[in-house]
Length: 68
Image (cartoon, rainbow, N blue to C red; front, side, top):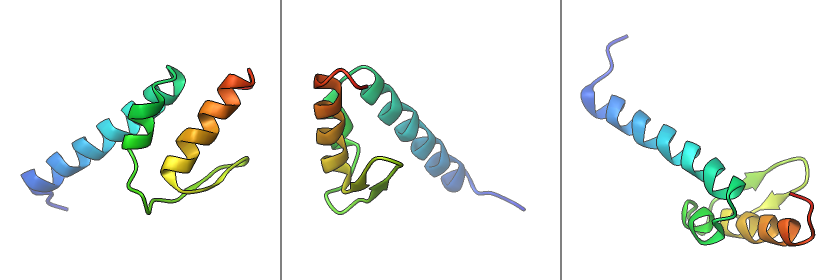
């Protein structure tokens, strides 16, 4: 399978966004975490089901309760 330079660049950007999204959550950068998502995004985990921005807020609330 031949992958174009544009496709490789797109993949690299996506990989970087995912990596940084995890980093921002781990380091409590809630504003950056929320900005990693579009308003209509969907996040599903074992403890959450909702939009990306809502996930960022729920993560903040969890951290404030000492559960993150």
